[in-house]
Image (tube, rainbow, N blue to C red; front, side, top):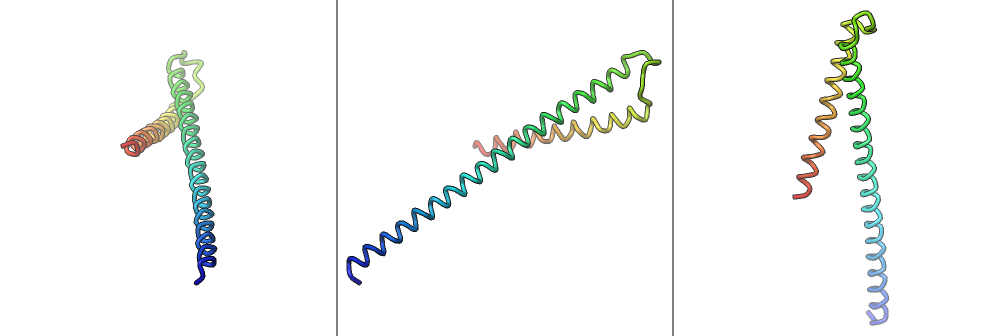
Amino acid sequence: MSPKIKKNLENSIENKKETFVDYDNESEKQLLREQKTFHWIKITATIIFSILLIVIFGIYTLHFLIPEEKRWLSMEDLERIKSIAVAVASGVFSSITTSYFFNNRNRK
């Protein structure tokens, strides 16, 4: 093989490697964008469910603090609210706990 052809072939291979690295880098950027988006979705969902939990707890507490003739919920409704509050609280707690442990594990 002549030196000129060999040099052109090597340059061609180098250009393909650089192009491949660019694609790989672009896929890494895309993956990073997806991870950031998913991270913010989790944070937003955690905030929304935390606010929902606070509102549910406030209604539940308010219902017991106001006089009996002004109460609008039956005991069955209160039990449903309580079960929803427990489900939301456990979801928020597990989400925060999982995020905390996964973030700490990745930092080590």
